[in-house]
Image (cartoon, rainbow, N blue to C red; front, side):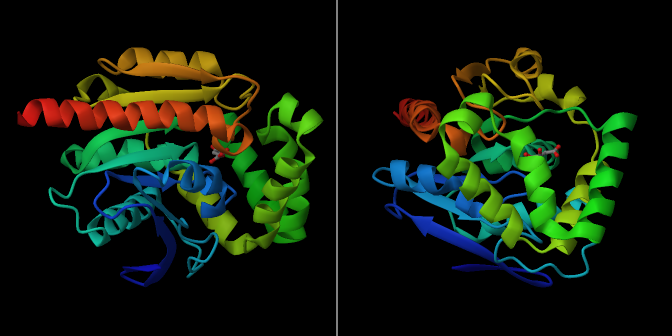
Length: 275
Ligand code: MLT
């Protein structure tokens, strides 16, 4: 499946009953929509599960590699539009960079969402150290390419349990990074480097929100997730044990348990409201 955007077509995939509640999954960096295989497999019995490749990654076009967060949000809304939902409102789940995209999308148009899961992410923008880290990554990607970058970055993203006990997950993560065009990864780094801080808008959110975080997430650790959840009225926080920054890939069963409970709760409240 492909989703048309103004300058090309994004790679996408949809499984599950078309009449089920639609859940759009937005992957993290430097991966692609294959990151969500465990969620597509585990939850398509009941929900219309949709994943897509963020611009520059997976099967989506690299284009000129000049991306901003606004452009990535435009693409997300193009995906939601393409689903032709009855009320044009969706449940969305974003991990890390996917969370940055959803947090900005919520600022731009909160009316498009029924509920949001923010996994292993943060609302703050990069500080100076973070920006300089991205500048080094952009240079390394240019000089050495995606495979070398993957060897360096994957061990920093995955939790210590995954690194020690799940070599197949480590390999899956590295394969995704290797297969991405370094120009697309550099573009995504530029978009993240220049993104705005969405923290001030958190207290104004008026929709169901679940914050999920891997217990061993070193990039957006549980304290960061807890502080973000505390700013969002009524938000729930759940910790995924023995998982790092890519909790959906590292511990799909536990991640899915929380995602399923959340979607069921959003559905139940919609039905309650309708009666
Ligand atoms: C991600 O997992 O999407 C990235 O670690 C996000 C980031 O680099 O800030």
